[in-house]
Length: 378
Image (cartoon, rainbow, N blue to C red; front, side, top):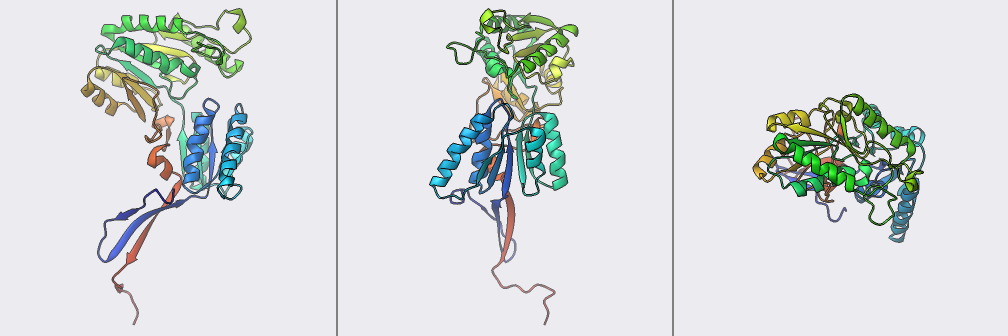
């Protein structure tokens, strides 16, 4: 990285040559979630190591083995290329014990965390006490928007993928669907039909679209949100319970669920369910849409489906979200920064900005003219 990432020669003032350079922070603590362990681990380890740091990786309690294997592969590669041992450490354990120790350790100069918003707030508080930089990629309640001029088949396929892939266990899941009133019934009917056609089963089985949730306890938590929505007047258009197939009885499965008839202020429209549950709401015009879509504490991602690119530009600028997809969803590039706003976090990963986040910036002033400063003695 030292040989390829450019520092900056800044515009000079007077007789001074000025430049901005970047240096490693030292030791970086990386804390990753259970829902995408390989991607999250690599997305933190690679730039932190490339920026010249040592990394202490604390994987989620439920998925430590994949992180340990990845860590072994990385450390073997580092050793083969002559890097010192200890450049990468993987420390499994509970967040309350191991995670807390990593965050609070005086030798850790930065923490990069992906996970729940409440834990992120705790890490942010510790970082403030230490005066330590921190990157927080937290929860989301991402809106997807279908305008009346959208290509409906394309939009419906994107909506289904956006919420039900990964069984909805994704911070960027498009869990709130806003449909322009002129085509609300048509889109709702197509989304329900598409959700009912998805195959639920083991993730290793051919043709399966929706696998199990991470645990039975989490499935019960998802079911609790659905029951709350029902109590608040929501209509369960499909799903709303575990599958009845006998061969799935022992797993933490939950059917793809679509709910309408709720106000935008209802709990299922405001809180991150982290499961295969989609709430559908109508909107009248752009102003109505912006008010509803921005009406949560989150600001991670959004999707827009429309044939009008001027409208898409206008809306993308007004939505409080760090990533916005237009006529697509859940697509990524390692070159493009990713992160959230508001309760969805702060800082960015990926791209050159994500790499610089693991460095300290320093400015240098060079006197090339031998200028004598005003208070020189003699």
